[in-house]
Length: 412
Image 1 (cartoon, rainbow, N blue to C red):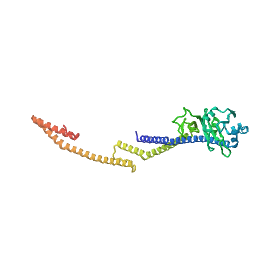
Image 2: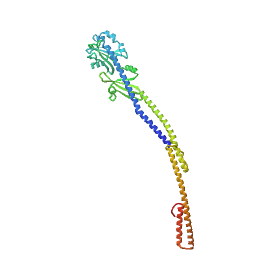
Image 3: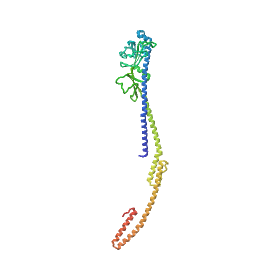
Image 4: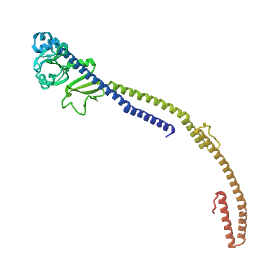
C-alpha cells in the first residue's frame, strides 16, 4: 500500500469519525432538546385546553351568580310563579346560555323547579334521574351555610362529563337569608369539545376515566403524560379532577410533531453542512499534504531508486527544503558522499592488493620455478628419492602461493 492510499484512508477515516461524532452529538443533545421542547409544547397546549374548560366553568358560575342573586329568583323559589318561568326559563335562554339543565331548590333541599334541555336538537327533555341522584348523594351542592359559599367544577354521572355551578339563592344585594340553591349544568358534549377545538385550533378528545385508561405510570396530579404516536403525531394525556378532587376525566390531545420534524430537518442540515465542510477540508488537506509532503517523498523515493539502479554513488538528490524531508534528502546525499569516498578507498585498497599479489607472485613464484627446474634436472641425473620429495614439497608451496594470489585462500 503506497503512501497516497494510506493518507487517503486516514483522511476518510477521520472524516467518518468526525461525521459520526456530530451525529451522536446531535442525536444525544440536540434531538433530546427538541423532544423536550415538543413535550413542553404539548404540556402547554394541554394546559390551554384545561384553562378553556375552566374558563367555561367560570363563565357558567358567573351566569349562575347573576341568576341566583336576583330578587325575581329569590321570590320564585318561594311562590313558583309562572310569570318567571314564561319570561326567563324559555328554550332560547338555554340556547343562549348553552345550558343543559337548571334546577331550583328551596331552603329545605326540595326541587322547586327544574328543566333539562337538549342543545343538539334544541328541545326540552326530561331531567336525568342520574343527575338528581348525584345531587342527593352530594348534598353540599345545595346545602349552603353562608351567602359567600358556592360550588363550581366538573362532575361525572350517567357516563357524562359536565360543568356544574351551584350558588345560594339570594337577594339582588347578595343578602339573605339563603332561600335555596340554583344549579346550572352544561354537558361537555362533542359539540362543546368541537367549539373549544376550533377556538384553540387544537384537536383533542375527552373521556371518562376507568380502569382501562387510568394508570399510575401515566398520571399524577397536575401532570401531562406525553408520548409519540408515530413519526407524525404526538399525544398528551391530562387527568381532570371533579369538585371533590377526584379524577373523573381524561383529555387526549393530538398534535402534529412540527417541532420534532423541524428538529430532525435542522439536524440533517447540520450534519450535511459539517459533512460538506469535512469533505472540503479533507480535499484541501489532501492537496496540501500532496503538495507539501507526499509528492516530495515520492520524488525522493524515485531519485533514491534511480541512484540505486545506476549504482553511481557520485549522483546526488535535489535539495528539498529545510524541513524533515529536506533534511532526509541531505542525509541521503551525505550517505552517498560517504559511499563515494568508501568506494574510492576500496578501489585504493584493491589496487594495493593487486600490486601486493603481483609482487608476491614475482618474489615467490619465480624462485620456486627456478628451484623446481633445478630439482627436475637433478632427478634426471640422479635417482635419489629424496630429490623427488623435495620437488613435491616445492610444488605444494607453489600451489599455496598460487591460491593466495588468485583466490586469497591459504590451501594447496
